[in-house]
Length: 120
Image (tube, rainbow, N blue to C red; front, top):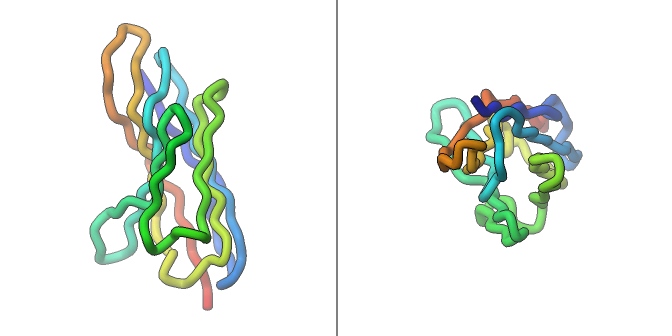
């Protein structure tokens, strides 16, 4: 069993910053690509950023230059530093990870989400 647990969401004013964390725990041999997605009310879930085990990153155009994704492989943790936040960044942010389990299965897991609210 593998769990992804997000933390760091909250309420912030426009222009402010937040740092999200997502820790993977459980029967993990290694974590491959990990990422962040978000879902705003009434909208579909969308990609925010991903990072491979080798630190290759990919960002949605809407967050490039403002958000930075990083990871600590020793802790199976991925981070999302969000700067210059805008009201349109308001959403539930979900962590996603492709994990190799200890019995050598490759599975994708999702966290339960953390709410980010940006006030204008």
